[in-house]
Amino acid sequence: MHSSAPFFKKGAYMQDFIKINKDDNVAVALRPIKKGTSLEVAGVSVTTIDDIPQGHKFAIKQVKKGEDVIKYGFRIGIAQADVEVGGWIHTHNLKTGLGELLDYEYHPEGHSDVEPSEEAFFDGYMRKNGKVGIRNEVWIIPTVGCVNSIARAIEASAKAVKPEGVDEVVAFNHPYGCSQTTEDQENTRVLLANLINHPNAGAVLVLGLGCENSRISVLKDYIGEYDSDRVKFLQVQDVDDEQEEAAKLMEELMTYAAGFKREKVSAKHLIVGMKCGGSDGLSGITANPTVGLFSDKLVSKGGTTILTEVPEMFGAETLLMNRCANKDLFEKTVHLINDFKEYFIKNGQEIYENPSPGNKDGGITTLEDKSLGCTQKSGSSLVKGVLNYGEPVQTKGLNLLSSPGNDLVASTALASSGAQMVLFTTGRGTPFASPVPTVKIATNTKLAEKKKNWIDLNTGKIVTDDVPMEDVADELFQLVLDVASGKKVKAEEAGFHDLAIFKQGVTL
Image: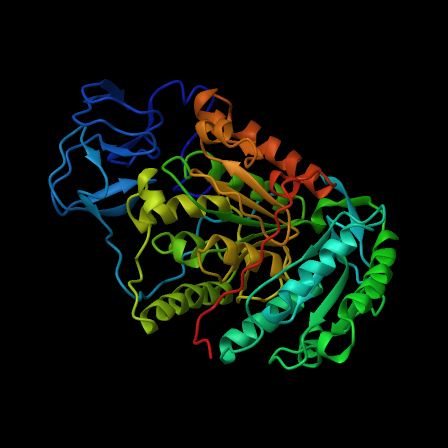
């Protein structure tokens, strides 16, 4: 992994804290540490002078006001007061050190791609256009929010007669498709078209009203060529009884989809999105670097991963820029970062209005702190692609995708760009889903045990049970293959499917 990653070995967690990088002047509490506790940190005696909550930082060297606080080997902010050895470092005495728009230089030296490894396989659905799905669902895609209730009614009726071989019938409701200005309308059209073409859908009913801006005749230009057996259209203003017409179309679509069967497929066809939300101080120590190891493993087998949530790259962006496979990708990454900063500035918002209250409760203090943990999900492989919002992935390997940090918007963006599933790490917990299977990965054992109905994998056992990270990454890789082969994640078992589109402008 890249140089900011923590060094792990068996036995590393049979203690109450971790010093992540040799250059750090803070350590992180792996369990709550009481005031007055004596510790030996990298050969130095430290006595805590405050209570240190799990996931939070404490000084292992004296830090003067105005000096850098170092974690992951990089600055995560500037001390706002003197901090004595053993003192708690958090929002009361640490502020971001980030500026506004920056100039960047490309320094690719010392970065190489992961080596190819033995091929892996899963049982997936080969589509006629060469794409591979991991679900065989029938989707109902409304062109406009006005028909959401009709879409739900069609979903309910179709579920009652769903044939064997169709995994699920899902209506993806959203509030858009009309009363949007140009950029937002474009986002809606591109994203809906991408979902209509997504291989996890064995068949799709596109449900329109008739008078909306993104009506079916307009959306067809974005969909491109399509199989008329797989995709059918219903504009409800044109028919007397939309439920009756929908029932006929859904029967045809479900019959068509039921004809697909799972078959052995190479993992090189897997596209996996990577996202974190409700992060805590253990996110960058357990779950995110575990996902990074997974990403490297999938890439080594010819597969593809996509990292998004651009605002949570701020402060760690140079780590990604210098891993770009060529200068052109470096320049695209510079635009990826600065264009998003310009978006904040244009709307009169602070660029660094982050982390969230939940992040801070969990021990993340500044955006640099959050970003250096967030980017651990990218592993160590080279960046092979940089995508605009709504742009389908074209290049195998690690890709970066433009999207905000919002959990539902970013996860939907990953699905829109082609991800067949999303890995979602969390330290606080969240029940949401996305249009594709969303694997919830807990950063800590307390969350995993409390929310067993939400969490699919616990990486907190790296801390609590001294399990080597490499073993947990192998477990995650196998889980991904199992989910790709049909195993339902907890959100699917609950029947959750969410869709959220990036809104940037005025609603008319």
